[in-house]
Length: 144
Image 1 (cartoon, rainbow, N blue to C red):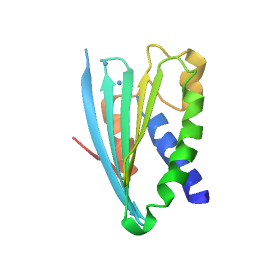
Image 2: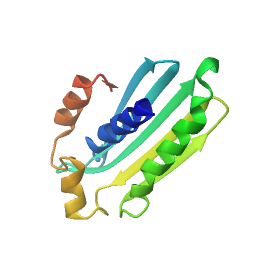
Image 3: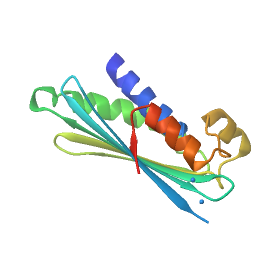
């Protein structure tokens, strides 16, 4: 259960570190393996000249056959963790489960988020594309 908490914290932290708009897009990908699970995270950050306007994040976790029993526990933990975003303006979330995979999709629309929510999210909406790219690459993402 602790692992699920760490995974959820990791996923949400990564999502909250980014943001997007005359729109240019930064696409980044992070892959990892941990205890019978393979995680692939796709992040798209959209920018205008002045600021980040939105962030789309998709995390796919595929479980090896010996770890499939963890899918239900992980799914319930993620479902509970994502409830906090259902009430937030500018945040959309989607959680899906397959036989051996869980997919989490989060979208952050900075134009719709309240100023206080932007502050607590840790997203620097004034950061440049280059600054965010550097930050994500330091975390292990491959960006193009």
